[in-house]
Length: 392
Ligand code: LMR
Image (cartoon, rainbow, N blue to C red):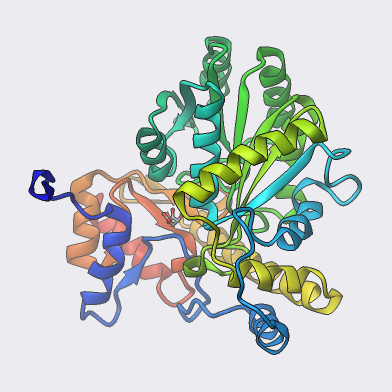
């Protein structure tokens, strides 16, 4: 039976981690998978996380099962940051459940949407490749629309057209901030328009917020999500703590549901609990418990927010230097200075991406996506020179 299965290629992005590790060149540069790096190229555990982990070790007195919804203290502690401190539950209309990372949350959102009757999801292209993989695996069709124009701004005409053409059984997936892979986000005015368009059309929004705090700031990065939620009767929100708590491999995320009433939200979440039970039974506890401890202690919260500020400041410094590099080879570096978050796309073809890797030891996704945080003041000139070389 099992020999009916065909060999599958490794995930292209995750395979880069191993390729990079195996490269003996001392001056190699890893711009592949999206993890934050310091100016020395490290991805340290946050000091606030370390402190809360110690606290957890000292105080946690049981590892007994919780339930498919995970640690609801964690789920609720995040809500003021995501949905606003003034009314984090939108009068009881929003509640959530823990999920294994942002991927688990997206998976739950797509599966719930399908169970509710959604047959297709409008998705900007390019998008995080796993969005399409998850939709395909769950069995929901994708209706693609162009995400960004050649001028490097969001393609609002394509978005307007896709919403206008949407059918009642369609949903739309949008990145809350720090668009992956382009770094091209909607402006506040564009979010205002998007919220109104989605509300008028009556399609279900699925909002993926995986990088809150890595763009302009915790509050600023939540603008779009809050704007859409204020306009629509129902929505699904997938949240990741991978990046803003540095919890990558520990898989910490949450799915939030907005409906027209607390009772309706509870009903939807009971379906989420059923899907989770059948998939992973319950999420891993550790990271969610630590995030709960950080957010329930003012000092730890301040320390975490400070660490997030430092990350953002470093990425902005890198972006400013990239943005001032002018045109090198055939690439205009100016747009990288104004894009948001960890990612940007360098307009390189497959051959050029390969040359970046083989000739210069620069590892980046096949799409030309770079993780800006992989650049440091020590390697950025080498990177710019390599781009100039392969596009000359
Ligand atoms: C990325 O896009 O690099 C991250 O979101 C990591 C992942 O799981 O793909």
